[in-house]
Image (tube, rainbow, N blue to C red; front, side, top):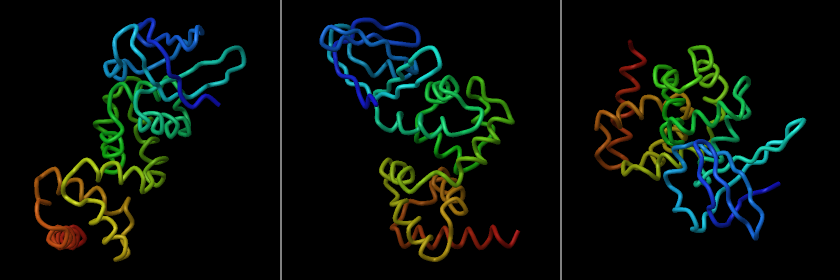
Length: 199
């Protein structure tokens, strides 16, 4: 309903900001981590927003980046994760880190998020591991120089699912093993996968 808000930053609180849009002040709830990216008071800000309609009130959530808003909406679809829980996730970790944690099924990292226990971490992985679309992987791939998206596409063409092969690719990337050409990296991943399957 309200895709974004653009106006003057009037006030910044612990978990929200007030933005003046043509004389109307909008209170927008934000993850504190996202507030660091904002300009100073009196400066123009643009926030991507989500309007939550409750029985007795409306709440407007805002983010400095579209990717943060997209992850926020994705989290709202997880049972037991409300808006407050989604804000906690985005305050603790950026979308790239979160997608990597889900793809690699890293429960230890997820339970470090305030309000997320072992059961919630397991639920996040269970409900999102197959929902993480190619768009999220494109975001991840665009932030590295290993041609990850090309590798994943080639693996898909060979019959591998991204959720099946991505944790291995992440591990190899973290160990610095994917520093060659796409063809070389693909051979390394396939070799590592064969070793993995023989265990």
